[in-house]
Image (cartoon, rainbow, N blue to C red; front, side, top):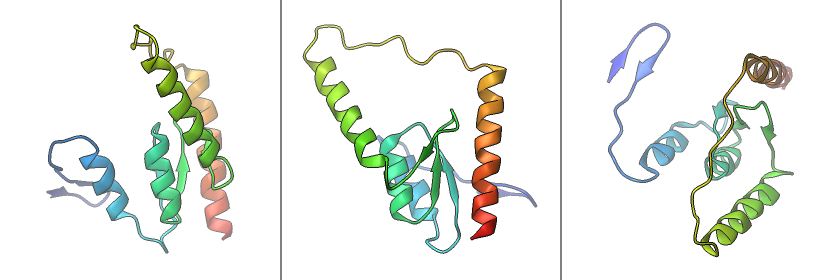
Length: 116
């Protein structure tokens, strides 16, 4: 493990979801941590630990929307399995406008956290 005044680097073992579970285990229920993730499962676990969770697009994961997002992910995966073609193109290229949307949403989340 390496540390400095502003960051810490941890080496986590290999394997599916090992990093996700390590990240969630580091969250403190009383700290109002913020998790940035594209993974709905990680977001759901973060919400379960009273952390804030945000997608890189700036969309907030909340207790009110996470169940629907998980269900949509499940249905999409099920539909992909039913087709012979299982690979999608992937997300579109990230733009400066995307970065600005994320920045605005992230700052709003931080301000909300400070008001609590």
